[in-house]
Image 1: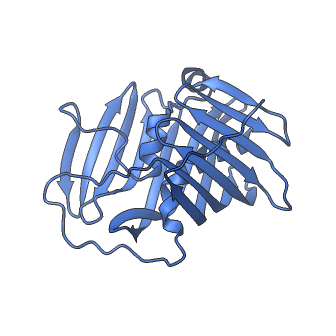
Image 2 (image 1 turned 90 degrees about the horizontal axis):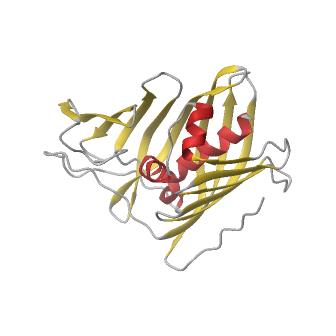
Length: 246
């Protein structure tokens, strides 16, 4: 079952997609954000490949690769392989549900987001994935939120649907440098830490990222840590296919 959560967490890493150009250029901010005005990333279709390292609570470390395709506001599709051309996990996330094929352990998942939250204690959605994966604030800011300037960051606290989201937004990059979400009943949490940014078309995009996911399984609380390094990316305007069948 941890393999499934590795797949979910890896999808969050699509926020690194544009960091995969052939030449790596560290983003250099040219001024400080005087008012809270984060940079939001836009796209239509994209495909990418990444190297991943998965660290499980048992101490097991798994290295592999991932192929990913995405269509904005519609679908995230991915395949994870441990090597030698073998496909371990295939997944599809839409506005309605999460579908995962575990081709090794045969622990398939086919759940709505509400069913997923009930079982595993994590509230997820495609919209939330799309914001986290591009280092955007998880939700648009409104009067209910707490926003303060602390040194070189804005600290944003948001509560939505019984989940608290705490984000640090760097005043130079105008992107989230760290985000932590916790369910108010303490059943699940997610941490995303964006260490560096790359200059792509004069905008900052995440380059290195670490994710930590805490969730519930029948045997008790579990933690998974994911490190992602993207190796190629192809943003495009023409449609992509998203092959997936149970």
